Length: 482
Image (cartoon, rainbow, N blue to C red; front, top):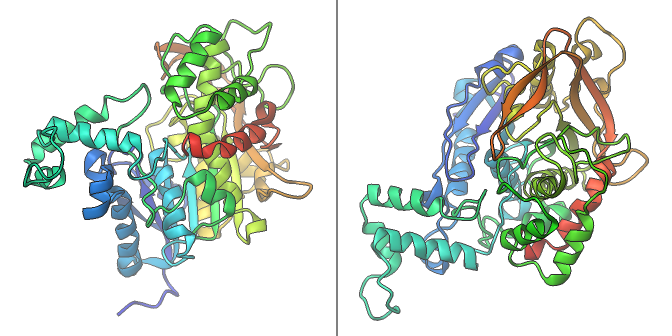
């Protein structure tokens, strides 16, 4: 029999990232819990990866389940509802959270069954850099190619039509030794284009009924609130290097997004336009103060290479973060809070330390670390990431800080598209490796002298009109597909 929830604390469920093909639930959640005075109960879940979790085809759909990894997560959330009270957690006060593919998983759990589950499994959603690879139909050309490549690697694809053998491909796969399956999954998983995985979630018509750019725009989501964010420079590790000319950029675009029409390509080239008189050295742009924008200049690249990095960042991580916030905006009867993590070099995953989920890095001050982890904690326990001005400012300052009264993210009204930009100023410059290809150094800043710099910005006009670019990607979402 369930215990009374009167004395129970909030429950926090962490879903790890790793591109749906790697990673594991080994993050130390103890730091973020401790910073927040052990005020919530934490759960870290595992789920099947690679072909084991995301193999898809007509045959899998007919005689099994696509999106098995997502179903594992869903089962874990049902387990939390049934048993978390035994560990002191309130099943009615659950927040699910993740980063990268973990945040993408959170997004897809919010979309599960067409968003018809309400708050039956969770109330709140935290999505840090939600990863949205191309999401095909379960029998689309890409998942089908991966299915047969996997079957061939296992030795289960004889090249004969059905009816000429008594064993189907799926039957053969189910009888194969697990080590053979593991090796085949790893081999095929690494055989895609640069920055892609072979086995990722699909639109299966049941658990996942629509593409995110389609369903989220309609506000059909589970839960009540979202805390959604992205990093300033998400794409550096995922785009092939040496894109040095406009022709290189267009060739990469056609390879990476093969379903776009010629008209779509022209629109992309006009949207991600080349700029003249650029700096030849990478630097972090200011976002909204005029001058160069992230379309052409970033902390890892400039020119055509940066155009590709930013395009990938926006289609794969940033626009999904926008769409998720829009789905929970007050006009949909829910609540959304939005942020960007901008501490240079602000690459994908750089925020994990500031969230209390990775080893310490020199460019994050102790004050910022405490502030950001407390934002997460307050969203988990209070449904609102706002923190005191003193904590947001650090260094003893009590001046009013934007984070003390975090604005709701809305699609309408005078304060539409309010987002907090989380950054720092000051400090001592030093050179640090950044995850880019080729590997390079970046100027970052460390103590002494770091100061938190948090401000409210317009997410729609940010970085030369990022909101409009995300609207464009939503309009061609069926042909990305996403």
